[in-house]
Length: 333
Image (cartoon, rainbow, N blue to C red; front, side, top):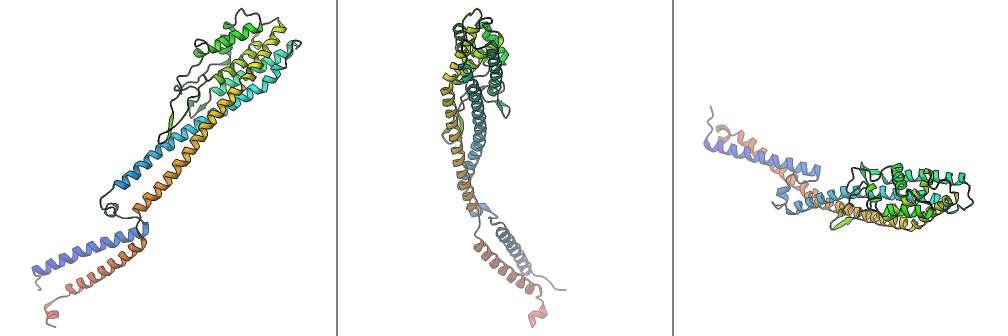
């Protein structure tokens, strides 16, 4: 029976450890060639993870901006669409109201009044628009619609104009109610304007427009003035009813510039959001490429290393095979 010495056992252990180490190196090099990434990023960075952590922090920040810019873009788009619709509602009747004369028939005035009432309801619906379940003209109270119904508004205006006998008196009562914090200010069910939404480092988007904006308030006042005729305001006085229709048309025409300005202001915010989103996307792409480069392995270097380690492993196998065949007979030969 062959006796294995302590030296032989030690040599066997050494060869086994070397074999395991070389096989691990072969596996890592093969994995790196297949994936193009370092198997041990810590070893590649020599334990200094600060560049990688900085990139990851920047990417996380950009991901947060991506979410806020998307919300802000959706919010302003919904507002812009509503203001556009509001302008169409106002311009679609203002010329007809201005064209009313003292000799207009009651039927003509009644038709315009009914049209104005319908447009007032549509305008309120536009201003109660929600985006992703959040009211866009209610300020910070995004969980409630900012305005009540058209009938409630007209009922409040009827009370405010009670006793008025001329078109001028009715128009003055309407203007006073819309300017009064206890009038339209109380009818508004929203809250304070939203604060700026962060869309880029050191940059915020202005989302402060609410249904309390003067352009919106004046447009509703013009439509409501004409809609009051559909509720029987100044009944029995055709001349004053015709004058009230003209005053309503003048109010809607006079608020046109304010609506254009409001639309332009929201459009400016939309452009700002889109520019920030483009910049953030470009930065995210650049950082992604840089992060990929940090973790990437040189394919030529990895292939060379793989061949070198394979050669070493084959040499080790050859030595191991020879050691395993050692015997007294082989030695004496």
